[in-house]
Amino acid sequence: MNDPQIGIPTRAPAAKSVDDTILPFAVKALDLRGRIVRLGAAVDTILTSHDYPAPVAKLLGEAIVLTVMLGSALKFDGRFILQTQSDGPVRMLVVDFTSPGRVRACARFDAERIADAIAANEAQPGKLLGRGHLAMTIDQGPEMSRYQGLVPLEGGDLEDAAHEYFARSEQIPTRVRLAVAEEFRAGRNGARRHWRAGGILLQFLPNSIERARQADLDPGDAPPGTMPHVIPEDEAWVEGRSLVATIEDIELIDPALSSERLAYRLFHERGVRVFRPAPVQAQCSCSRDGVETMLKSFPQSDRDDMVEDGKITVTCEFCSSTYVFAPHELKTADARLL
Ligand SMILES: [Zn+2]
Image (cartoon, rainbow, N blue to C red; front, side, top):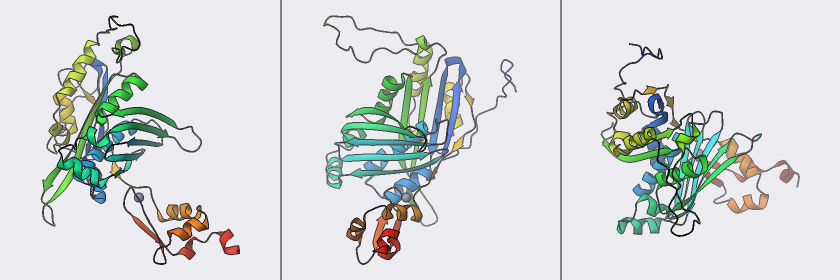
């Protein structure tokens, strides 16, 4: 079956769900583009290796989905790093995406405050983050300048922060949905919980910039009594963001609902085109050689301070891999001469 107008073959959406993929799509009739991310083993590997309290793991899972959605849009080889710093019980989240599809992540938090938040039923993402900022850094290697975008965190969740970022910095009408949950599944060694995560990003990219204008978010310093500057949103965008608002969390993580079927469910009336999905995997970039080089760059006195029970032990904060060195292995050329 071919679309007579554009000559692109059409087919039914794939029923089979494929975890750990990013599915780009476009809805030409509405000038919409987007991506659907579905994570199974990739997010489970990262979150299980850390053994964080469940609300921290869930929040980090959301940050992983957001980072994968944004990082996979890079058109060049490089890294995309999302980092929060805030005054809530979760002080810091770091997610590091290396193109084309490697991700690692970790969180720093105050265990006592987390326990209090859980006991008081105050462990929602916005409350765990508190106030601070979210930074997104694009690193294209040592030869290129780094780009950093910053958004304030003001008690909202990561979806709020992403909307704020796109409205203020990129000025592209954007909607993001993120979902993370634990699934109880039987395995060879008995049943255990598995983390699953998913998300969708939808953007309105009309040819005419005028159509992408959004209503002012803030009345600014206009004198009291001034009518707010209201710009009606484009109908195509209103339709797109309304459809995204109907998505339930379960639709983003359900292993029985493929990303293609979700795209079809949302946009079939307008026609939706999907592109080749890209794989994602949990993979840390740490190595024994890398840790050794880092330790050798420290002054000898710092290395001496790190010796415990006759050895230096370094644990990677991202993947919990442990590297053990005998102090003599780290003697630098200068130190040996002395
Ligand atoms: Zn590592």
